[in-house]
Picture 1: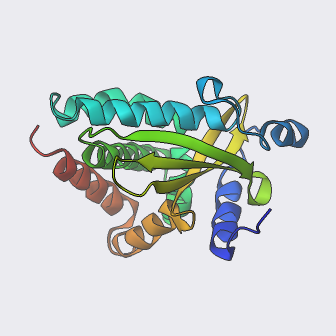
Picture 2: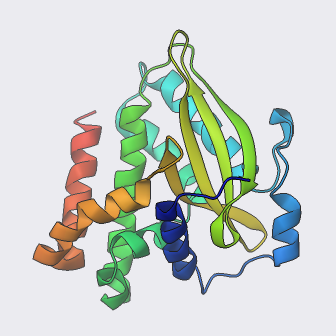
Length: 221
């Protein structure tokens, strides 16, 4: 198996540290679930939340022409909260400001981060032109994570590769990060984006910026 790029290994290390307090399944169980790819009709283990997310993204595309953005956001948000460990991602992207904040500030920032993240999906997956999203493989990642590779296919276009980084949490799996083209980390991009806002306005400033960004993405629909 090819060694993951150094940038992925470093991000995985930070994300695993962010999840250190979360209950996880034992190492043997995690290894037992991660090496194979299940049939598309019955995804299990780390592939299961990715399969549910893929279906939700297809639903977003199919409803884009006939349903207001805010209604689509309300339907998509529960799927996103279930599939992603958004708190772990925000803890890394907003470090060290998130951990220094009080519980009310953390909750407000997490709500805003969840809303902005979901709004980005609603805005990007807004029309259906025969696309499909397929899980093409599952493999061990660094530091106890599992990588699930997908292709977003559109007729007449080259597939777009998205790789999801997951870790077992309790009896399920949670997405920690999304890698575009297998290497470009969503969490690393968010961390770079957030640092200036955090330095100037702290976590409260980031919360305001995230909510404003979500409003812009959703428009007046």
